Image (tube, rainbow over all chains, first blue to last red; front, side):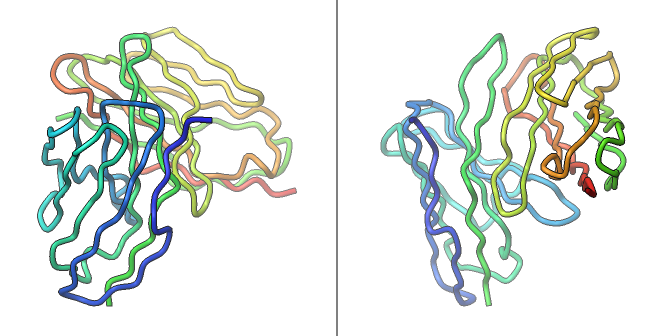
Length: 114
Length: 111
């Protein structure tokens, strides 16, 4: 079955280190998204991509970057991890159904920055 | 700016006790309203899309309805396995297809 996976599922890192979170989908969706989820804030959009070599900033993009070299993958990089980036990160991809884009989410990566 | 407000923040029910979750929204034009279920430690799972006022969708014990200002997720005779956080999101017409999410309602169903 087609799916969306994230790795690692859990990560502990230190302040200042570079961290990359992987996202892989097998639905062949063009659109992919990265969110973070924190208590009191809900889901907040970090970056998104509408296709290969396309990337766009979301609501909370500072300190994060993405690259899209193929349809299946959208890795998220924290260039210099900060304690404020401790969060749960979700990747999503979407497909066009009935006039809307419906998002499907991965299982999440729980990141702790010490 | 699009806004989505979900209420209540948390809801505790006894098994079999029916209730409703509310999602109020402000959007310039609605392209679609989405409901998701999120279990602890997992990603949101898509449930429904509603497109226009008056529309209803059902899945097992869940029924979602839509008006011009809000959506309700009705839970009939809930079971403990219905315990989860339910998220609502709206997608505005025109411009990007990026949805705006509410903060969710945490539902606990006691046996």
